[in-house]
Length: 110
Length: 465
Image (tube, each protein chain N blue to C red):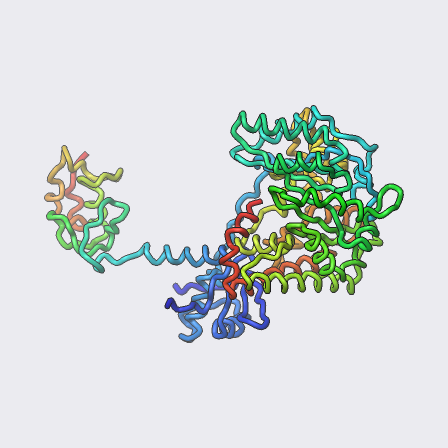
């Protein structure tokens, strides 16, 4: 039997307020928990602070927020950020600077 | 940085069962177990609470109150949605004053024997049809709208009623909308032909009947001063028999009759009405203002009917007492409003000359005139007359726990008490708060019995009316 809450919603408005929390509980989940899965698309990926790099490219294992944002916004992940056009004109741009946080100055692209 | 929490406006109800807490802003209602209630009492006077620094057993309970939005971050500010403007709300209900004339002389009539202070007159059938078009053409996305026949005594003008009903059906079909009809009558003119018409068109009928003969006849004599109870009751049989929609008795009681509320209710249910609603009289003159003892009697009457409502619900039945059903419906949903009622916001009245007013009770009052069928509804007039009536009211209501349910109360009643009788603001507030208090306690009692679950759908439908 479900345990009765010490503070129990009686009317519909009270239930609506408590249900806001049910939604809240599900919106944040650590990526290390549960079955390994590759979230798809920028909006579901917290690139910043994501400790492992799922892509077979440099910088591997980098968790520098600037680096992760930079790579997360390029290639097949469309995002209108100021990163090189990695699909056609600058396919190997990431090789120019294995460590974006350190080597970003070597990136020279239009 | 630690989040500091502060209390939002709330009211605690204690009694025989678990304590209740009512969140004022949202009209949310929670029950508190003993431990949660104790924690609330312990922390209630602390203005700013840092959850991380509270002892663990209290923390769980305070977190629960945080989840219920009784505690919120001290920086929280209620985002008030911009209140709608009258013109932005499509029409859903139109009251047609089909007859500003009456064959009775009720002692407490607010409409000066049905005339609303003008020479007696009847609504022209063409104007009635025009009003129907106005309602349907200005009803926005509503698929169902309501047309109410009112007066005076509306049955004095069956010609206009028939014209309006047939036009509403024809035009409604053409534009794929349905009109629901309703009438409030004194019942003295009902006959089999009229009743057949009302039944055929599923007109919801409310009969103004104030209880047993000795009470009713005192309040509602005819033009010669004779009682009308016997006449009305003799005509009720045909109306109540096989009615396709519920027939309600609509009672008005003067302060000296408030002690007899349960007797009145029982009598009317005994006559076969499907539902009974009881209104304490509006004090149209100072002799109708109640004493403290009379106000206590009024509440006692409502309390005993509420008790009966609960015991009836335990048997799986619904006591057809309109006042309480309407209140429970609002509490059930936690319905808060930006305005106290629909007057001017989807609800309008048209008088017998085709002039608009924000509500039937304000008909004929020049200050509240809001345009005409010929020129359309003047929404600026509605805004300005309601603003001037309510100027500063939200400020005086801002400390009241009942504000999200009451929202300042009835415009007419406020106008009557403050502008016409010269009473200070707030003379009916104590009664309103006591009535809402009774509703909340009754709701919680029904909830703990599981009775609300059975009638939930009925209440939800009612709240949408």
